[in-house]
Every structure is written in C-alpha cells, then in structure tokens.
Image (tube, rainbow, N blue to C red; front, top):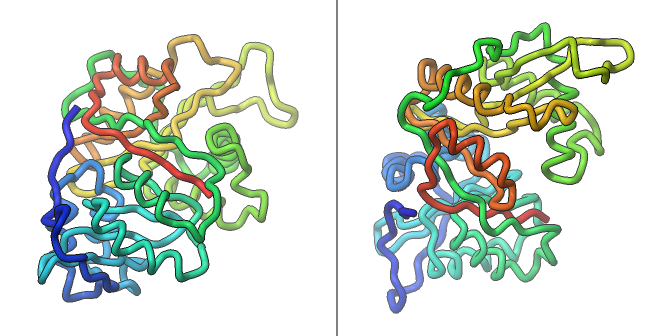
Length: 301
C-alpha cells in the first residue's frame, strides 16, 4: 500500500498559519491537490470547474494552512470536510477554527490518518454517529480485466424517477438514514444533476425473480455514479445492486462497463473507496482490476 505525496510541515516546526483561501491561492491549491490526485479528486474537480479558489466560485470555503509562504494543507468546508495533504500539525492548527463555529458539516472524509486525527481534535462537535476507519482506496488506470456488461449504460432523464428510488435505497442502506428524511428537494436535485451530466450508469430489468413493485415492473438492477472527477481521475460512488438479485455475479461485469465508459468519456484513472468489511464488494472490484493504493476513513456526525 502506497501513500503518495506529503507536506512541508513536520513535528517541531512552527505552527502553521491558517486563513481562508481566495483567488490568489488558485495555483498553490492546484499544485497541492496534484500531490495525490486520486485522494484529492473532489477538490481538484471543483477547482478545475471554477478555475479559482475564491469561495464564491468554488461553492464552499477552503481553509489553507501555510508554513511560511508555502501552502502545506487545505480543508474543504461544506456539507463534508475534506482534508487535502493534512498532517497532525496542520490539524492542530485548523481545529480551533472548526471548534469555534457551529457545526454544519455532517462528515469528514479523506485519507484515514489525517481524518481520524482531526476528528479527535473536534471536541466541540460531540460524539460521531459512526466511524469507518478502514476504507481501502482503489484505482484502475487501464482497461477492466473482465468482459463488460453491454446492458449497462448512461442513464437518460426519462428514467429519473426509477433511478431516484434506487438511489434513496442505496443511501439508506449505506448510511443508515434516509437522504429525504428532511425533504426530497436537495437529493432530487443531486440525482438529477448526475443524470444530466451523464455521470450515472445503470442496468434496468423487468424481472426481479418474482419481486415486481406495484405500479411499475421496470427496476434498477445495478447503478453507479461518478461522485467526483478531474481531468485525470474519476471517483465512482453509489454502487448498488438490487437486493433481490445479489449473489448472481452481476456486479463485476457491470462495474467493468462503468470503468470502460468512464475512461472513454471522462478520465484515464477510475477510483473508488470501499468499506474494509464489505468482502463481497472488495472481491468484485479486484476481479475488475482495481488495486489498493491508500486508505480512506469517513467520520459521520
């Protein structure tokens, strides 16, 4: 397992200076993200789209940690907190600012060591709802190793409602709460955005082995989304197989098709992260050709 890149701050050095980033920091932030393109794909993608580190362009705040004039770490602050090239030293510098403001973020996501260390320092945030400390970060930079499923394709807007229902089920199963518990509007917008950009893949079926739903026979058999992407990396999220058809070895060929299409249309490297205990999924991704390059963690509040 390889950890790529590092920062310029080490134990014993002066405490990093923390401030919000702006337009003048755009190049420095881009170079920081490039130290680990796979781990930092979320912020890299945002930065590429906005072409600026200004909060009004990025759609969220980024706190930067500086060692002298060098940007040595950054923290995306939005619905999630996503550390970029963080260390215990930069976490110690940024934690007081996070503890001093009301918590609006629901999770911390990123490389395991920095994420778990940061969570320990956020005393004002209360006890996390759950901690997933070992999520292998996988990548595939070539063609899939198995034959793709040709029935998996890009979801069209006409299938929004069917895919939306499957997305809700996937989220409930993965996170343990409903994404529409406080209202549907936000989650519907997110699903619609992914479909509109051609970033959701699915295979549909009219036969779930005797498990039709009232009012509609057409169901999602398999789905996956591109949750984040840059010019070089696309991160797959939201992988789901209908519960009534699991164990039929459908996921590996379906994922192979997602990899094939994603590499053709978006980025040469396809990545994802998976819970360490999900041995079935890990075997599936291994069959497709994914290899572990690092470890993520997710802390949810």
